[in-house]
Every structure is written in structure tokens, then in C-alpha cells.
Length: 187
Ligand SMILES: C[S@@+](CC[C@H](N)C(=O)[O-])C[C@H]1O[C@@H](n2cnc3c(N)ncnc32)[C@H](O)[C@@H]1O
Image 1 (tube, rainbow, N blue to C red):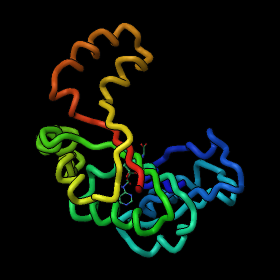
Image 2 (spheres, rainbow, N blue to C red):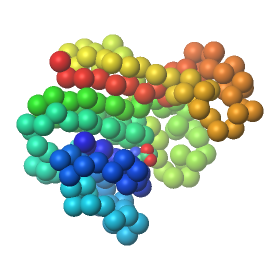
Image 3 (cartoon, rainbow, N blue to C red):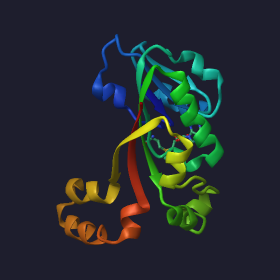
């Protein structure tokens, strides 16, 4: 399991993977410092500080294992060329991989440049989902799922009273495409 841009996600504690599972959490060194102070992970859940776009930590990945790669809330913050290079690295660096990531639409990326929260933090989305471009760029990948996050919220949001409103909003194509979860496998 390779968790890219893991942030403060505590999934290994919730899932308790067995020692036979090699689990790598990767994020920037400052974030990994906080994780170390917050969580007590078993030794086989490796905490790897570094940029996901760096080559150095790839020596931690066993190229002979089938690997699940998860990147939540990550790719949109990375420049397009670096996203594609990282996906290429996942394909070349694993025996077989399943890759799950979320991606924003082009309009979400544009809106992020004007959103007050993003402006206050000095950040914005750099990479947006262009399906034809991704398919052309990564011909060895096969898509398994493409799910609108609004559809998941419509059935899972704990605020049950909100669900009809989410469902109504989900009929708008711009809302459908705002944030989607994609799952690919290497062929
Ligand atoms: C929106 S948070 C998502 C965190 C976590 N995946 C979650 O869903 O709760 C984005 C995370 O990606 C990390 N990140 C952004 N760019 C990165 C990079 N180039 N290398 C490693 N981590 C990065 C940030 O430090 C942050 O922890």
C-alpha cells in the first residue's frame, strides 16, 4: 500500500494491516513530523518524509509487489507534468498497481484562484481532470471507476436533511464534475 500525500490520515490504525502488508505513508517532512507526534504506527507501516514527486523515496517501494496506490486531495496541488511523471513512476515502479485518486474539474481549478480560502493560504489547484488527455498520456492504464463525489455525499452525508439538496445540486453537470474519484489499474 502506497499512500501519497497522506496528511494526518490515520488509516493504518483503523485498518490494522497485517505485518505481511508493506505500507508506506508519504508526505512532506513537516507533515510527517506531526504524524510521528500524533500516532504510534507499527514498524511495518513506514513513515516516509519527502515530496511525492521526488525519486529518493522510491527505493522504499518493493517493485515485485502488487501495490494499491491512494492519493486523496493531492494531485490537484501538483503541476500537470509532475502528476503525469508520478503516474508513469507508479506504473514503472510496481509489478502491478491499482491507483485511486480524486481530481477536480477545469472550472474548479479556475475557481480556486479566486476563492478567499485559497487566496488566504496562497495556494490554488494546478492540475485538473482532462479524461482524453489522461487516457492518451497513460495508455497502459485501464479505468475501473469514475465516481462523482457529490453522488457519494448524497447517500452518505451524516446530515440526512441535507441529502435532498445535495441530490438536487448533483443534477448540475458542473457539480457532478467538480470533484470525482478515479480508479485505474495497470494492464
Ligand atoms: C488536502 S491534504 C489531503 C491529506 C489526506 N490525503 C487526506 O485526504 O486527509 C493534501 C496533502 O498533500 C500533501 N502534499 C501536497 N503536495 C505534496 C508533495 N509534493 N509531496 C508530498 N505531499 C504533498 C500536503 O502536505 C497535504 O498533507
